[in-house]
Structures are given as structure tokens and as C-alpha cells.
Image: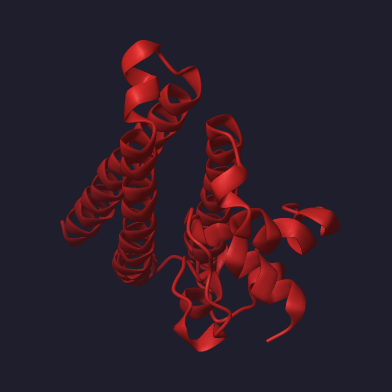
Length: 227
């Protein structure tokens, strides 16, 4: 594992405690494990400043002298990167080989050929039957693809939720650590941290609802093709 890859793994971990340096023990949202690619190739457009990577572990070691705002800022930075990684992984699943667009493109190609043949032949019944078989076959392919994507997206969401649980624990730790200070004044930094977590929780819920609708749509298309 390269230093750059290891550094990204460190950053997206999101813990406020010192991190272990044993790579085999690190657990995080490793998109590469799910998609069969490296983290850096999966995160096109999410480039990390080198100095952030270089100083990340030092920042954790100085946790005791960091202000509350600095600690929250670090958590928010990591959380934002985690969200970007999650979104990129979702898109990678959707665009992987055999996606819905490819299936629809193939269908349109063969359907176009059959329509042209239908115009030129007097034996229209055979061509019409072939068109029906084509529609059924590609409705089945869309349904199978939707099920494939659902399994991948559910696994991604589960990994994301696991990481969010770590951030929730980090939030509670900060709230407990600064309990006396928070009793005297409202802290906008912790409120922002809490709001960001709530926003991502809502995003996961909406993603789940969207996946259920997609499956229902392609299942319905499959049933209509059988009529």
C-alpha cells in the first residue's frame, strides 16, 4: 500500500483519537474493496493537499492542546471527504459495465433492426413476435441490473452508516469533554457538526427510498413486458 493511499485511509477514518499505523488493522469506508479499484482512482476530483496528509497524524497527537473549534473543524473536514468518497462510489456502481444505459443502447440497436425488417417484410407476425421476445429479454436484463446495483448500494450504505456511527461517538465525546463549557454558552461548532451528521443520515434515507423505487420500476417494466 502506498503512502498516499494509506494517508487517505487515515483521513477518512474520522476518529479524534490517535490512529494506529498497522494498515491491516485499519477499518474505514474502503471503496476499493467494494469496487475492485484503488481509492485514489475512485476519488477522481477529490485531491488532498499534501500538507494536510503529512500533518494529519501530528494533528491527532496534539489533540490535547487543540481547541474545540479545531477538533470540530478536523471532524467536518474528514466527514466531507467521506461523503465525497461515498458519492463517487455510488456513481462508480451506476456506471460500471452492464449498466442500464448500456442495456438500453443494446435494446435500441436490435429493436431498430427489427422495426426496419417489419417495414420490408410481408411476414409481419414473426417480426412482431421477435419484438415481444426482445422486450421481455431486455426488461429482464434491466431488472437483474437493478438487483445487482441494489446489492452494491446497500453494502455501500451499510459501510457509510458504520462510519457515521464513529462520528456520532466522536460528537458525544466532544460534548462530554466540553460539558461545562457548553453549559455556559451555545457552541455553534458542535451544532454544525451535529447538523452535518443529521444531513448525511437524511441523505442515506433518501438514497434507500430511491433504490426501492428503482427496483419497483424495473419490476413493473418486467411485468408489463410479459403482457
